[in-house]
Each structure stands twice: as C-alpha cells, then as structure tokens.
Amino acid sequence: MSIRLYNTLTRTIEPFEPRRPGEVTMYVCGPTVYDEPHLGHVRSAYVFDVLRRHLARIFRVRFARNVTDVDDKIIEKARQDAPGGDLNVACSTVAARYLASYHQALALLGVQAPDVEPKATEHVVSDGKDFSSMVDLIAKLVATGAAYEVKGGSVYFAVRKFPRYGALSNRTVDELQAGTRVEPGEGKQDPLDFALWKAAKPGEPSWPSPWGAGRPGWHIECSVMSMKYLGEAFDIHGGGLDLIFPHHENEIAQAHAAGKPFAKYWIHHGLVTVNSEKMSKSLGNFVTVEEVLKQCNQHADVLKMFFLSAHYRSPLNYTPTHIAAARQHYENYRLLTDLANSPIISRPDIEPYVTPIAEVEELAQTFFNALDDDLNTPEALSALDRMRNLSSRLHAEIKIHGPGQSEEDKNRTGRFLSAVRSLAEHGKCLGLFEKLGKTTLSKQIDGWFEQYKAARIGKDFKTSDTLRKKLNDQGFIVQDTGGTSIIIPKH
Image 1 (tube, rainbow, N blue to C red):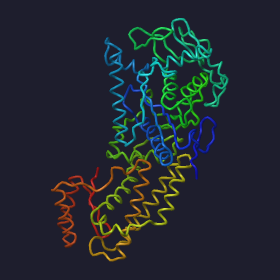
Image 2: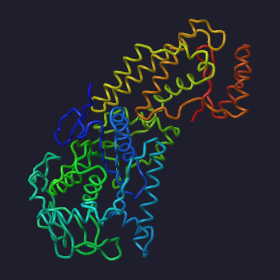
Image 3: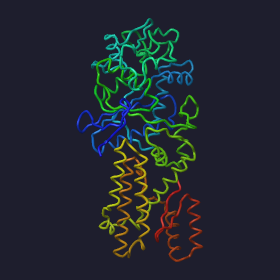
Image 4: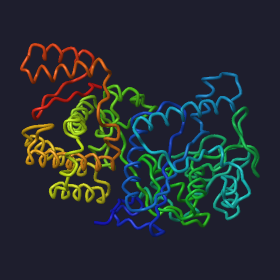
C-alpha cells in the first residue's frame, strides 16, 4: 500500500506524491513562546514527529518548524515581567525562556529536532535575497495591488481581491465575514482584511520598512520562512485544526497572490480537549507537560501511548483516567522488553536461534499498512499489541531458562527474542521504547536481587519475601515469570 494522507485543502484522502521524487519537504507551525508548553503543544509536535519518521522510511525528509518570537502575547508577558523596562530586551528574554521550556518538553518525549527552526525576528528585514524577508513579500503584495497601506503606516491584505479565499476552510467570503468588525483606528477597507505590517507603538519591538517602523503580522512569517527554507513549492504544511482559519487560509492567500505555488498537502491534527473544550491558556484549562509526566511516572512512552490511542485528526480528551490506562498499557510492554534484555534470556548462545517468525512479519505488515492509511496510529498500536501478546505466549512456552536448556527450549527462547526485538523495532517507528532496556542496579540492589533468586531456588520463601519487600521499598518490582526472575524499577 502506498502512503495516503488526508488533505484539508481537497477534503479527501489522497495518495502522497512529493513534488520531487525521493524527497519530502515539510513545514509545521511551531510555538508562540510566551508561556510554558502544555499537552496540546506536545501532541502537535509528536503527531508530526510520527509522520516524519514514517515518511523517512521511504524518502529524504527536510523538516522545518518555526518559532514565533514576536507577538502581542509575548509583548504583554514582557510588560508583566519587566514593568517600565526595555520591552525589546524583555521580549527577547521571555521568548528565549519559553523556547527553552518547549525544547526541554520535546526532548523529554524524544521528539526529533527539526532540520531548521527559523525565528520570526530573524526574517523581518531583507538579507539581500529575493523574498527572503517579510518586508520583501509585503512590498511585492503592495506592488501587485493585493495589499494596501493605511494612514499611520500599517499594511493590510485585501481579501476580496483574492478570489480563492476560503478554499481551505471551505467557507465563502460572506460566511467568513459574519461577526467580523473593524477596530477603531485600524483603517481597514474591509473587516476581513488582515494585517501584514503593524505600525510601531511606543516602546514595542519594531523594524524599519518602506511604510515606517513596525513589526510583521502573524500570518506573513510562515509564508516567508516556509518558502525560504523549503522552496516556493513544497510538499506538506501542517498544524492544528485551530490554525485552518485564519492563519493557514491567510498564508495561502499571501503566497498565491505573490505568484508562489506554496504547499501541496495541508495536514491538520485534532485538538486536546478537557471536558470537550479545547485545551488552551486563555480558557485556563491547560495541563503542562511537567504535570502530566508526573501522572505518567516520568515515562514519556505513557504519554505517547495516550496520543497514539486516537487518530491524529480526532480530538483527544484528557482525563487522569485515560492517562492511567495508558500507563498500564505501557507497563505490559516494559515487562516484556526488560525480560528480553535480562542476561538469562539475551545470551550469546541463543543468537543462532533468533530467526524470523511468519506471524510477526504479518503483524509488521499490518502495522505499516495502518500508518500508510492516513497515519492510523490506533490500528498500528493494535498491531503492536498483538505482537506483544504473541511475545508473551512464546515466552510462556519456555520451560527452562538459562544454561542447560534443551535444543527445544533454545529454539523457544530464540523465537521469543525475535518477537520482542521486532516489537521494539516497530515501536521505534512511533518513537516508543527507545529508553527501555536492561536495568542498571547499584551493588546493594544487585546483591539483594541475587540473594532473592538464590532463596527462591532453595525454596526459602520467608527470606525471598523479606528481600522482595526490601527491593520494593527501594523502588523496584520483582517479577517471577517462566521459571526465572527479573527486576524492574517502579518509575
């Protein structure tokens, strides 16, 4: 099966065919850095990380994600942090602090860094190359009549001069205009017209331009930076459903009005909700990444399994109960993976017996077919679950572990290892299981565990129970399974 993706612009699932054979260019709208990242932000980053990983199996992928580091919200935060101070310095400080928080959150989840991460403030004025800056593109739009300057030095895009406006959101201009109004002092010709350039206000960050000092509107930055780093015609533009209108609608209008082909596929993910309302700072119903990772016992894979449980285009409702279910889901995998990495299973003499298993290969094909079908992660995760169940069944068939195994038990051990390794390999396509492996123990813990195993073998269950409790008090769980024992940390 070839890769198929839902294109918001055509409202259909289409075969994915990049503009240049063998190469994919993808741009995703990144954070506006004015506060700590919440669950919705990291779902977005993770969704496109999974898409990027899947595409990278077949194509060379160039991935860009921007940073909005000048914005009304950033300026307001800077005013709160440094009342009466230099807003230029305060805005830079705010943006740097929260960009670092965003990077830290994605690092905790193992989300890959983009190939390029352009900042809005670094692309306002020209560097001498054609359309490499926001001022350049705005000047082009003014020259062609697609935009106009108003008294005071602001510049607006004339929406009604762009006939295809509304195609992405599937609404007419008249439908979109309902409820809009012109704010006092804006000077817009039409309520739908949007700012390309905002005239400078006293003390706020500003840059020089043909229309006077000011700063760019939000929408123009992504049109400029996506084309600068990926070309005027690129493959994928992504973001959340809440960005379809007005942000992405306006990006298309700006680029096409300037004669640029722009993005071919528009990919949008559903939002994280709380009690069926969008999680957002403005509603005050957000959960930070730090808070939710505490509920996940600091295991990022728990949060990823929560994300994977819903299709990327669907809303995902956050509750502690859903996180608890994802935590139990993860523990089932962790036990198997730690068991497979234990010295009693993973031994040099077993390697010749690690051979492919037909049922595992069928499940692997099911896994990739699900991802090919518009990144259907619930189905892909279901295939991993079946692979996990098969691995558990294969382990249960092993009668004796360790040295002295019969040829039959070595074969069984090899098949078990083969299944778990395939499970781990396919999980990594979703960014899962990258930190699982053999548990490293302190000398004291290792000594207690060895004494525990010896007591079990000698049927001294009173001693083994005492040692199990001591290990548990130190944060370790002992599992007795298939004639052997393994130890895993609780967190």
